[in-house]
Length: 95
Length: 359
Image (cartoon, rainbow over all chains, first blue to last red; front, side, top):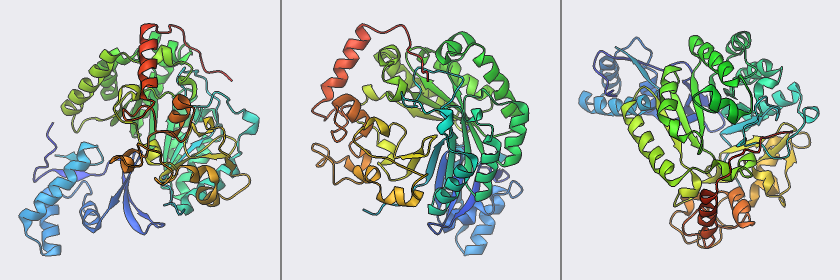
C-alpha cells in the first residue's frame, strides 16, 4: 500500500505509541514498541495535532497558520514526517 | 569516563521457562528460583532505572510469565512511567492474566515464534503442545488489541518457512515482525552445528524480507537480523558497550549485555549491593569496552569504528578467546578465517540433534 496521506485522511497514534516527556534529557520523545524517537519542536507540533479526528489537510492548514509558514512547504514536511512514522506503523490512518 | 544515560533496561525476571529452545540466550549456567530478586527489589530497580533516564523496560526471562508477580511488576513499572514491553513465549499466560496485564498498563507484547506448525515448533521448543497454546494466547492478544511484535528466531530448520512466518504475523495482527537469525551466544553456541543456516538460505532470507517489506508496507514492519557468520561486518554490540542499554539477571547482577558473563575476567556488580546509577557509571565491567579508545587494530584506524565499535565482545571471546579482539565476523579481522572454517566444517557435517536448554 502507499504511505501517502490524502487530505481527508485522519492520522492517529495507535495503542502502544505515545508522546512523552523525557525529563532526564529535557526533551520530548515518541515512545513506540521497542523504540524511542527523539522529537524536535516541529515533530511535537505535528503530533500534538494527530488525534484521529483532525484530517491531514486540517493539520497542515493549522500548522501553516500557527507558524506563518507557506502551506505547500508545511505539507511536504508533514507528509514526509508522517509517512516515515507510518512505515513503522507508529502512525495509522482513518480514511 | 562519563557515559550517556541508558535508554532501555532488559529485566530478566527469571531464568525459569517451560520451553527449552536450543538457542536460548540465557547463559548455560542458569540461575535458580531461590536466588531471584523479590517484587519490591525489582520495583526499586525500575524506579532507579527511570530516574537515571531509562524509558523502556523489557520484561524478559526465561519466561517472565513464570513469575506470579508479573502483573504487579508491570503495574508498578507503568506507574513509574516506564514503557513496558513483555517478552514472552505466551506459555503461562491466560486470558485472565492478559486482562490483568492490560489493566496494569502493559504497553506491548513481543511473542516468540519457534516455528510455523506444531511439529516443528514443539520440537524446537522441546515442549509438546506449546505451539497450540501459543496460538490461543496470540489470538487473545489480538482480540484485546494489545500491540504485538512477533519475534521469529530463524535458523536452518525454519528458514525455509519464512513466507509462512510472514503470513502468520499478518494473520495474528502483529504490527511488527522480527526475523531474527540466531546469534551464537548462550545455548546457541553449543548448538551451532545444528542451527547454522546454509548459504542458500542466507541469500534467500534477504530477498524474501526485502520483497515482503515492500509488499506489506504500512501493514507490517519487518526488522531483519541477518546471520552473523555470513556478514562482511559485525553488529554493533548493544549499539556500543555500556552506551544505551543494560541487562539485569534474575539475581540482580547488572550486565552490559545478556551474554557478558562469558567474558569471565570481568567483574559484575549487583543491585543488591550498589545503586544502579553507580554501577552504570563506575563499574569496571561497564567501562571495559566503552567508547573507542580501547579498540585494537584494524578497528582503531577503520572508518566503521563509530558504526560497529569493533563488533560484539562476547563473539570475540567465543571465536578468538579474546574479548578485546576485533570481532572475527568482520572480514577485516586477522582471525576471520575462524568464522569461515567453522562454516565450512559445520555445513559439511551438520549436527542433527539439539542440545536442549536445561537447568
